[in-house]
Length: 346
Image 1 (tube, one colour):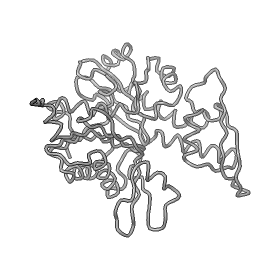
Image 2: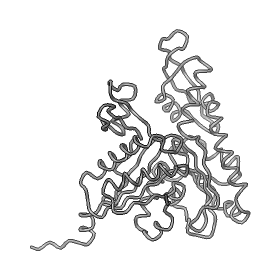
Image 3: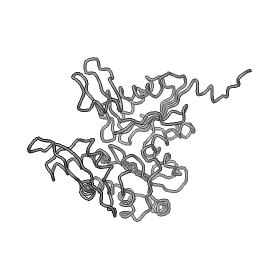
Image 4: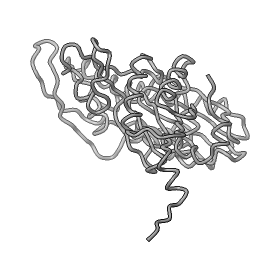
């Protein structure tokens, strides 16, 4: 009995379009062929210093942090929303693309969302890696635009909408109307800086040094940007700076809220400046449409309430905010003419 194959089958057989969120803390890759996110791993690469070859990427490379053998270095190529080490970033991205698409296809399109702060050299490096991976077309797009799309905001309308994307290395704010940005700016303060603030607070108050992974656990377990009714605590271990011995502490949510006050205030100041520089008519649209939070860093408890308290505007968190950027990037693969209009040029 003859089998009839659809055009979609043949398309999937020979193509494998990728949407990539190249973030400071994590890299996410969505394949159009499978219609889902196939990679969501830390933006870390382990490189052999003798052969210059990749030993591990993502979760495997993260496990080598502080444990890597001689001759192998673990690198975070992204810093403060920018590609900090171009060569390492190229190797990392190439390894992830190969991992997401183990079999090379024909006519592959790759769309990469890059931070607004990414410089020209970094953009060219990203584009070159994708071409080296045999991509037919490579498009670079702004993270704030695709974050808004992934959050379900109507950027096509002649009404203003506002997105606050709190990632690992930067917080990016954009006011968008009619497919374009009316206001856009970013600060190098986000999830990583929250971790650092917790480390410094504990070091100053208790003379105990904790690891970055421990600080991140504290942040997600009891960290908050706005007071809550229930008191929460967590036990964390570190090294006593005077005695050099392991020490265990019990921390409260109010302490960690104090620790996070500086980065939270910086985010609030950026939001307030965006509102101050938004034209009155678009600002009026935000009274009803409010502010949308995206990015992994936006999951800190109470951030939406803190922004509402500061701006008197409704603030909501996107569904699955950490994947909003890659989902918005993937959506552009279904509208190539619009993708060509908003792509970033070198």
